[in-house]
Length: 278
Image (cartoon, rainbow, N blue to C red; front, top):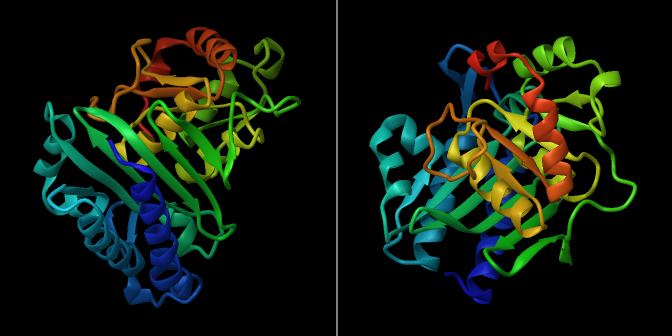
């Protein structure tokens, strides 16, 4: 389990990497700086440089703890096995969450770091890079957003939520707003990290994702749990960072909000579960 010193060092490292590798390249990429890993899945020189710098810094904070980075996994999928090893620790890193936004010059992107120990997330950090908002969570010790403790959904918070774009179409078609008891409109920012921060801030109440890449969700799911809510798979079991990538995730910052979203989700037809989305 990391201590308060580790928490501060990781937060400082993330801010340093954002300032050195992401912000100077934002809206300053050449055509050669962006490529497709597969159709619709972009990577930029900023992703690669950010991950390298994060991995180097994290190795100094906790020597010997391996790093499972999004771009490293692209080259060696076997790294994912480290997340599910009993009794061991690893870092999970998304060096640039919201790459498509970043490449398009949209100011909605983040850095996400999580620490896994014995198959569960014990530490989480998310930095909304353009807006400098940072959330930090430690298992059993709560979650903070810009240094202030977050407990549940703030009073008067929005009932809206975030879902992947393909799920959103099915959600809106099958479950109009009038049929959503306590669940408002849905949208997507195409950046899970910023969406989790918006839930903590009360700007939204929940999120639903079909695909659960660990670098997108391990930190955020811990934050929602530490706020008094949680995250569950589509089958109702608790989210875990090593779960199958198509197991789904439904998250909210309070248990009542999570129950309401789960009820709305159960009203959807089965074909929704067969969709895939980014």
